Image 1 (cartoon, rainbow, N blue to C red):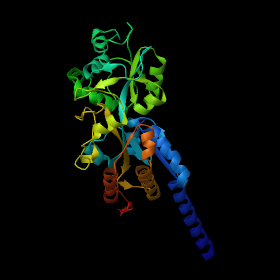
Image 2: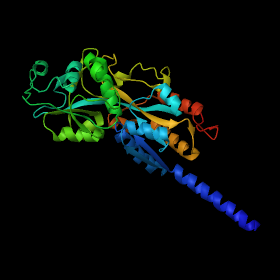
Image 3: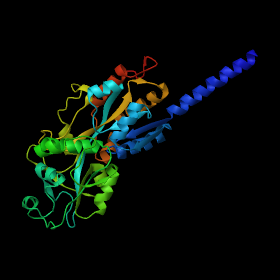
Image 4: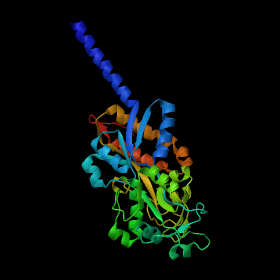
Length: 347
């Protein structure tokens, strides 16, 4: 009988260990489509290096926040930073992984990337439905050398809860009083007009297919789909293109440590060469983790990404986090995240 009981105990102990090892070797995450290209690339490289599989579902920031709050994934992802009071209520910690830019993209015959110039006011009025045709005199006056067609503008926007939409509408909210009064900003808004695509992928697909359309996507999607981006006039009065340098300029001088919840917003910043619709993308984890093996695996993956993923991020035109930022984040992990009452991450 004792041998049977001992064998049973050992069996369940081994089973538990196997389950823990298996769980830690397979991580589930979901959320923002903005960082999906780089998270996918990191996941592939990390799996080759460690054998750990990262299953990241690109479902939009709204879904990522919801699943993180409900605890149905090991980590959530959102481009719209949660407010400190929201984080506190949900028991979550958020930390930034990379920065990038949201870009207006168009499908106009004969127009090449960076040729079309738009001001903040023009972009807002297009999305408000006030400017209806590419031949509008306000657009042609700004672009006298371009052969813009006398065609109706088809507006493409997101149909799902989206951090990319949060960044885009946060920008429009800052530069247009009428936008603020009639639409506002958020992961989902009551759009005045337009057709909706799901995810950055959906918007990119619609713009690529619909002649004379305009949409907004994370820059990596514009590059991958060979879409034509517009130049934008920034707060300093310069017409700038989306580049690593202009994204980095938008983030210069950011005080991560002094911002509650690390909820930094990078739209319409004052940098001379700054791209005006920039943003960081965030990871969400529970401060009191339920599965010690999985939270340890999650943090190890993002630690690896911070320290080994910069070149991969730059290859997709994301701006990696500087060392002083990710050092601060890892210090925060050590001080904040626990499992079974014990710290998960060592300083």
